[in-house]
Image (cartoon, rainbow, N blue to C red):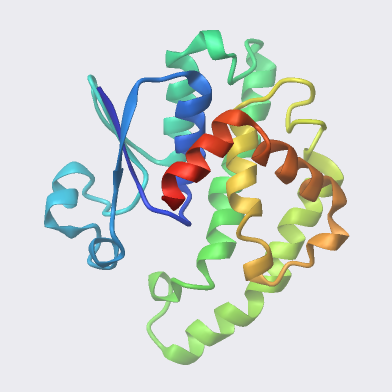
Length: 206
């Protein structure tokens, strides 16, 4: 059986949503905060040497990185239509998810994990001060240019939507004034209302 290693408040939520939307039979393994702080804990490092969530254990092996996990789920469960079938539209969806992975998530990480890029506390504080502006810029671009509506890719719900929902849920904590981003806010609530998403959110808050 597929097994998702996850942690509340983390980007693993996007993969969790995708599995539920796909109708996959899977188990979810909660990684506690102490294990995550220790780089995932010794046992988890045997599963994912990167020591981060998510990791997805499958019959083929362990898959890491949200971008790859989402693409695999969509391909493994084509009946759920979680990615566009057209190759150009698929590439556009991957471009959107890549932006979330390499720009939005990295900007967010500067709030908590400056140690990845620097060693001095004053450097960490400088990174934290920059987060509201950098995250606001990210979501302003999504609002203006990247969100087709009603879903990211237009009329079709895809893995992009669960991923955007996950990162948008960090925004207020990162100092983003979401009242300036009505389309992103409406999208977030539209995703939150989906039965699969409600089920996942109930699971991780239990």
